[in-house]
Length: 64
Image (tube, rainbow, N blue to C red; front, side):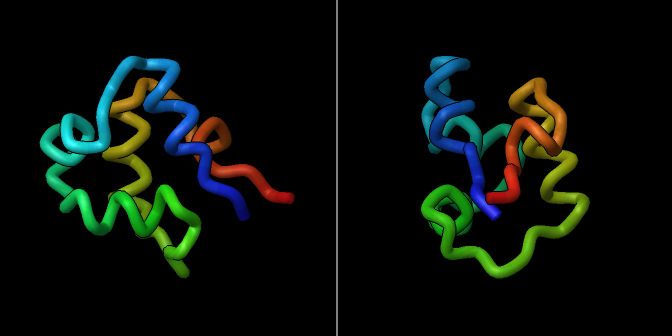
């Protein structure tokens, strides 16, 4: 699985810190997700990320 968080942030002109405030997830945890080191993502977290980024789960996660 690959997380496209970095690309989506760039497309939307948003920083990781701004996203952290919007979804109420620590910058450290978002960094772990962004860098591909997360082993799991809760559906509730995925839903909050997608709402904040205006995307679908398939835009955020890809299978390679």
